[in-house]
Length: 271
Image (tube, rainbow, N blue to C red):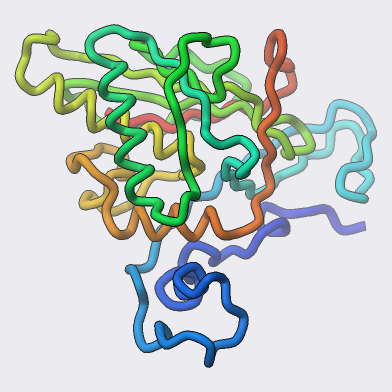
């Protein structure tokens, strides 16, 4: 029986199609008949970029996943994507109130909320970290277990950040919450470059937590691996809007005690 491949669970070119059909559908209320909308004369926004994540895990014991039987030792590889379902909104975000991070997080929420004009995203800051969907801490990202995932490299600057994702293995169907974001200043807080960097990187990492699991290849985008702009570009917005108007693979699930040991762990970093 054929096993799923990395491309078997979603269209490969999903993000690349945004320039015409994807965001036309958003702008026209997901209309299904082309003649029902006059936006077809041109794209609403530029094409987006890839946002999905490829994860692989070895099956520990014979199991049936998505109707396919896997034997112990088999590898299952999937391309996965994620958006917060409407039932999860507004997201509950807990922030360590150090170095002005609380204010930077509030500003980042407003930035993304303001760009997603159809109400795809909303969030609020909470005081109880045990109830959080997303946790933002002022610290270096911790070392990842050697057997799991990779942290995307980036250049050293006034500050850096990382977002850790924990995906259930080997089924690749659940995103364990809370999603954890780490922000760290490399310069003194009094340095004039530190504050703007912390604000920019916080907004960038929140983009990862929203579901943009890849970096943009374009330095003009906020989601570029070494961000130099302060707000999402048209391409950033096109990508996340497309994502939030498509079915996605992962569902958020709280990790009540400790994260399951058989988890795929991937971190998307920026510096």
